[in-house]
Amino acid sequence: MLQKTSYAVFLIMYIKCVETTGIESFHGVRTDENPKFSCHKIDNVISTGRCLAKCGILMDNIIMVSHDKSSKICMCCNDITGSDIIGSNWKTFVPLPCADGYATYSLMQYQICMKYFPVPASYSTAQANCQAEGGDLIKIDSQEKYDIFKDYHVSIANNAILQVWVQGEKVGGQWQFDDETPIPNFCPISMTNGPDEIRLRARGTTSFDCLDDDYYKEHHYSCQYHRLLAINN
Image 1: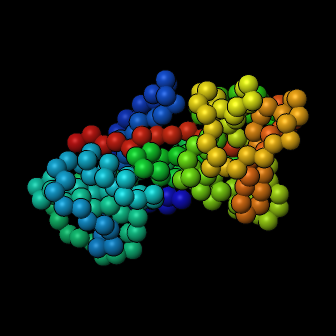
Image 2: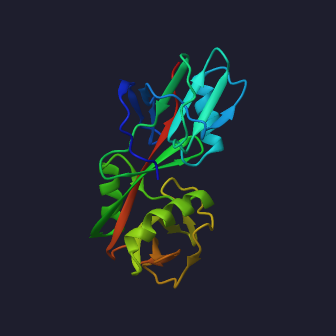
């Protein structure tokens, strides 16, 4: 999970919601911090935007990104415990935090913001509530996303069985996400195939499986939204 920062904030650049994709593009928080010797160095990076893109591919957890245009040096930081690399040309940014109550994760070029709601609701109600928050029900569409889902929910479960709605609908015998794309098997699906069991829930304590369930049943749920990592020079 990304750490909260207490750095002096020099500039907060605009946030733009991309309504058609549900992805929010953000331009970060400029700070006066120098990169650290504990950061990862990448040479021959010509712009701050490219520096951020390379850091997003390199690291799951970005705490800070620094770029020196004159030397074309990019510093990707997921550990800022080292001493400063002094220089007058560093442009340093930290990711904006997610909305209040949302946990922040990095996945490639995206931030994933995730929040658990301990309120019983039907699938359709949970889905509508997430959309009202500007997001969607959690979508487990990759191994990395499953790992993030597990990391976030294991501590919530606290060694007890936890059940939450996740995106999934059975149509014509096939499981699909809300955007009608097929659901891969990163969260193993177990089915009892009741006539009303056309929605998907995740169930577990330290690991999670996905199970079919009646559309009218009530479970807790988790919402997510994405933000695209991008910086203007």
